[in-house]
Amino acid sequence: MELQSSWLLHTLYAFCFILLLLLLLSPRLALFLYLLRLKLWCSCEICEAYLSLSWAKSFDNLCDWYAHLLKCSPTRTILIHVLGNIITANPENIKYMLKTRFDNYPKGKPFSLILGDFLGRGIFNVDGDMWRFQKNMASLELDRSSIRSYAFEIVRCEIEKRLLPLLVSFSGKEDDDGVLDLQDIFRRFSFDSICQFSFGLDPECLQLSLPLSEFAVAFDLASRISAERAMAVSPLVWKIKRRLNIGSEKKMKEAIRIIDMLAQEVMRQKREIGLSTHKDLLSRFMRTVEDETYLRDIVISFLLAGRDTVASALTSFFWLSAKHPEIRSAVQAEADRVLGPNQEPKSFEQMEQLHYLQAAVYESMRLYPPIQFDSKFCQQDDVFPDGTFVKRGTRVTYHPYAMGRMEEIWGPDCLEFKPERWLRDGVFCSENHFKYPIFQGGFRVCLGKEMALMEIRSVCLSLLRRFHFELVSPYHSTPRFSPGLTSTFRDGLLVLVREKRGS
Image (spheres, helix red, strand yellow):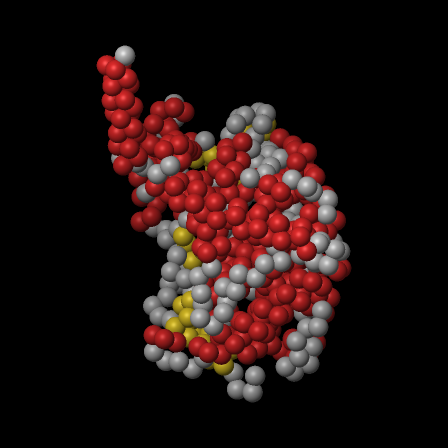
């Protein structure tokens, strides 16, 4: 019996050693195993370029290479065979996916598994009845004028009491102490704002000392590792790590533990104090949902959407506006005309009167969308409007980043930053969601769109009227992006801050 136990123990040790060895040899071995399982090994030009990374010799980012391939495709649709992934920038295909055959293109189980530890059963990670329930509940709350006013108050307070004093403290400094990473500042700002709106919790990330919040660090870590899972050449890699509780998956587990503990403590305190006087989203949801794990999943999904996307949109806008002084001047001139010199918007509704500012924000997101691509999974064999056959189980991706660079959609000046393309006689006019799917489209259109736009415009207006931002050289003519769930500048957005006279 002892001999048998010893043999089993040694066998277990050997098995663990082999698994660890496999992880050390990743990602090339994982890619080989993945392709072997799918019986897909393609020698076409696109797949060879993907596997060998030869595309990187000509393009700074993978999204730029995809945009090039899609522009060269007659149907604006391509297939990456080794990934089993159809990618499209064709508005008719996107309408077909997001509206016409919506039920045939759910988020799918592969993504639910990838994001399950982080987002659980939150709205961005479920389909069917569970998604419909959360959509209806969230729509009911987010459409109320009271919660829009509450969001506006939070954003204005965060700008006036934290963001502006912080930028003033950096203004005029010439040495390295004066260099500020605006991307980091925007992430802190949007995290403070969305936590107060969603949880009724203030992590105070934007204090003058720029402290590190344990919750924010855990949230960042969980988001980053979730993105790494999504981009792994094979799910085998992260699943083995999670099973053995090693490497990044061990860190993921600890981050989720911190997030869960804080969420549970916030809910406990709210139930003790009472929910009737609280305006935040969690308190509103707690009045109708008893399951605390479910509540946690719902609110964490809103945190993810409200923090990273807003920060990404602001980073791209200020990178572009720093290179286009005429845009800054036009935004300020409109604000002085509509609101009055040095006057701030007093309400959510007053912000809607700033048409040029809205156009500039939309134009920035056309060129640099916060979500560069989004994927669904085909449930049953299908055919796209452009004639592309879509096999059951295929990952199908639409690519807003590439669409913003298509001449047939935006004209020969599609690569120019030109807010005027959104104006008709000085009035902002939006495009249909399938030509401009920045906020998705069809049945899954972004529920927090108006509040996100309010937050972005509020920050842009306040900062452009008070400060000049000078990009710190050397900076690239095209941003370099880090892999992630949202678009992130790899090296941040480093600037010197100059306060305007009389502001």
